[in-house]
Image (cartoon, rainbow, N blue to C red; front, side):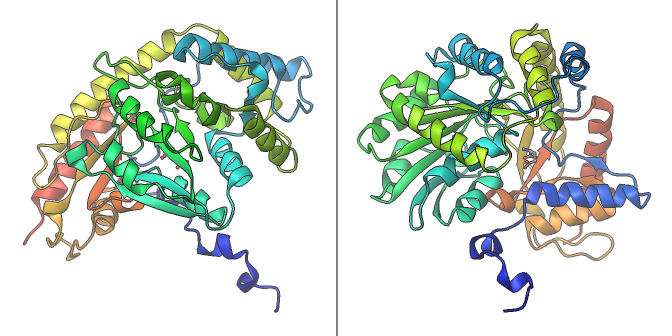
Length: 405
Ligand code: GLU
């Protein structure tokens, strides 16, 4: 065979590129060509990283902390991560059972790549974050997608979990608050899932808690290892500083789990990135050990924006959404727009067509729900200032009003 794309790894060849990054790339290309775009696509806080965290990064550079750390991360940071899990989640974690990675995505990748073999199954409740099934695919395993519609609040029920488990099930992926729906699992809901899992000791659980602090209406956050301590020997609790401290570009994620798993993930990482950026690790240490007022301020801002967006979207004819309880996404049904035609003659036959037309004709970027495993929906990220959000909502309403049958 000649050197060509035909020789690509077959698991990679069958995987789809990240749908969120594809939209972000389209936004960047349109902006580069001079078009104005209001982006409600990227899931990242619009705030700047807190000053004391930036200062810690700068101080790390100036102090010469510019060399490798241990593969699993700086000991001080791993201790701060263990303390965070204890303080915020009631999890008794030994710092040796933590691992620092280059973003939350690498925690997930390491965990799945370290454990999955061909033919293994991973239960992925849908709507899901776009990368879960693709990482499973890259590992040569099989996603078992369990559809969780609006009727169940987009959440996995114990019965649906029970029905999806087979002897090949290796992992269940949970994500609360959820990207893309903002759904939050209560203690009772997690307990019901845990009861099912207790009967299936072969199943590991990946709890993606990256939106932990973006939770509204005074709801309390729970994670499954906290709710059911008997599962602790097989839960990887994953988190990071990206969403809580507006640090997406610093690329620091972390996880805590059983020693054998963390060790395997460390072995993989040691042959891959060698570990996360040293400078970013010092910044993350400052974030986890410093003042917490930033978290409160951003939570308040996001809750206000959520209320604004939900109200505005429900006023757009043909769109409707429930009130999400966390994260910074609204997942709006666009079913009533399908079959209609835009003023420039584009027929909307899928949620992707809606998203494309909204970008092309109104300069508003969103992501289609089917990329998250449930259509016809659009995911609208509200990590943007109020004024831009209002302008985007006016454009979306106008878009909906000018469609014809
Ligand atoms: N998690 C964010 C999102 O869903 C960032 C992009 C990505 O990594 O998918 O938009």
